[in-house]
Image (cartoon, rainbow, N blue to C red; front, side, top):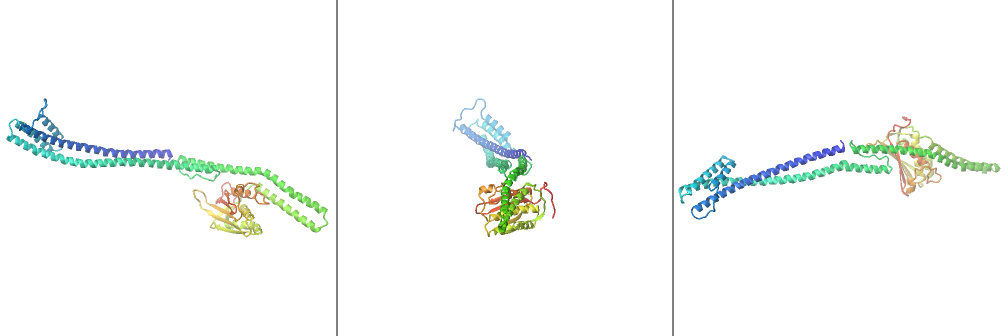
Length: 477
């Protein structure tokens, strides 16, 4: 599902939950209003009973001459308005007993009104007053009970309404933070990952891949960014190859310059032999010098040919232990001459890898001899191999590290270590590490150097376990 669809669905769900909460709140508030109205009705009817009793006693006192009543309204007098109010109470009654009581009260008031036309005390008035007391007391008691029940119900409904309102506020806050969390998860964090990945790729880490999965828009953008980084890596590899090819012209000039001095030495030596042919020992010394010059010239020519010819791999199933023996055999003379020992650490569990034995052994021997040249006599060079298990979708790989205890490299030298013709070793050609990197990249791997002055150097080569589909011939051992 797309991010827009997820956000729309989330908003719909949150809206439904919020509306349900509002419905619960409205129901609780309506209940509270209903109970409040019921309490008000009970309170009003109880008060009407009390007012009616007061009015009756006042009329009795006025009839006995103990109280003077205010003037009655012209249109409706007593007991007419009292009877009208009692009829309303009869219609509002909720039980037959309540209606009977009000009817009895109405009859008693009419009887009292007739009895008050004669001097008090008289038996009809006493009978009517007794009847009024009995029925009004019954009504007041019933209304007081209902009023008390209404107070309890009203308090409960008020509490429920307050709880519902507080719950609605809490739900609204939780929904707001839930929406923020989802926006952060689906938008903010992926965008941050994309930014960091773009920065890494922009800094030249073309092997970096964006750790986003799924089918949403940002995951699709991540895959496009990965594809762009892969194409950039391919273009960079092609550019490096083109740079190397363009450097062949410079290389030829360099070799020509390198061959001129040895050839001049050979010529001068031959001329000197001709002039001083009488001394046999001197001739032998000169011939030895000639051989050294020729060896120097041959070494440069061999390096030139190895670098300029196409790097075709012939892979075979190979264990790290076999590769280590080939490395030791090739670098043994230099290690002995420098007084440096070679240690091999194997953590590959005898796994086999698709590698070009000859070229990779030569490349790692170049690293080993370089380490020996920069190490003190009596020190040790270590070759460490281990298998890297597959993680985050990456295939299984083999990692080989060549570590020395030498003088290390300063930062300016480290930055130029793989540049063609750059060397920090007297007598070096500046082609060794460039050739090593070319062979590693042809295997589909990467190479890196970690070094500090006086702290030694570690060169790390990481290669895929299986051969890429564009490789050349593959042999099985």
